[in-house]
Image (cartoon, rainbow, N blue to C red; front, side):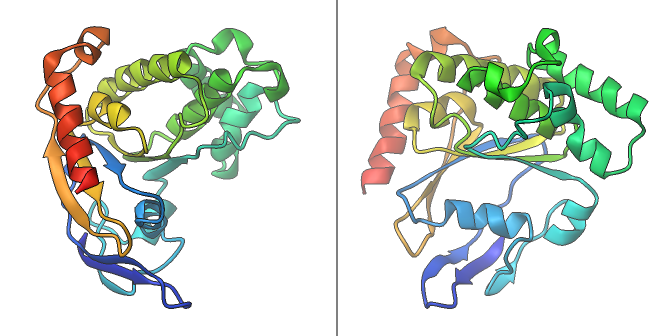
Length: 245
């Protein structure tokens, strides 16, 4: 992102001169107050909206080119599952739309459902699942596309704390299996941002700018011992202090 800005037709300045380089295989968390442009960045990355000024380059391509090549996958806060489809068919939907054969679609859907611990439930319907299980299905559906860039917009925001921490652990395990996959993750939870990321991007109130990019110099894998470590507390204080000021 180079001097990236977005002004909406009603005059709202959502982003102003955002400059950020993200490396292959990173896990970046974006934190900031509501309305600071975090979701606008994601909409620009997916090509849903054009920038007002500046350059956005994804894997050497424009956003629309990258999306067309299925290099980008998205996980929303809401699971957005089709209620009449089984988990297997929900996960296989992106592959179906891309013209995969039934055999290829089934094999890949089974692979990612096993990855998220739901292979035994692949014939179930979404209404039979808990909130955490539905989010696992959403993650599996995104992974089925084998994306190079995974965008996650507050995916765990509606979950209880125990389920949230469990999914954080599982997400990091999945991410580490593919060292070339880059993850961009929006959250309002400072603790979550520190636990997950290689760097935390702290944004200012509107107009959205980058206030700071804070490295999290803690090796992976990370587990509960990191959550109770003094270094974790210090990093949480640093991110929180930057947010406040």
